[in-house]
Image 1 (tube, rainbow, N blue to C red):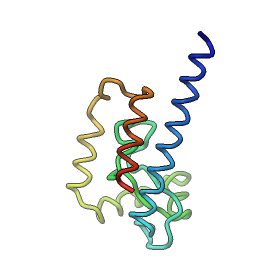
Image 2 (image 1 turned 135 degrees about the horizontal axis):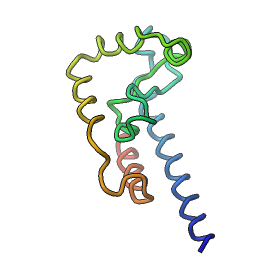
Image 3 (image 1 turned 45 degrees about the vertical axis):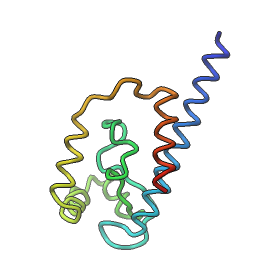
Length: 127
């Protein structure tokens, strides 16, 4: 019984990692330049944090390409101009739509093996 649970946990972790990697590749392909300063993007940033807004974790619309400097300033210096510049650039409609999704409760089956399998299929189609 324990080995079956361990196998399911390992499978779920692998699928989650695969989804994260696929999401990163999509964001980097769609946003190769930093959306704040224009230099080469090396970080795929979640505008709404993935830890707080799981429903947006794999949303392509929530992905922002950032250079190392802007990503650092946002996360380690708390620079509020980073997000404000992105909202200005992408528009208030974009921000409002993401806010609406962020406020929705998770759907049934959220964070199961099946959930990650479905997300991986969706993400693979977008690349």
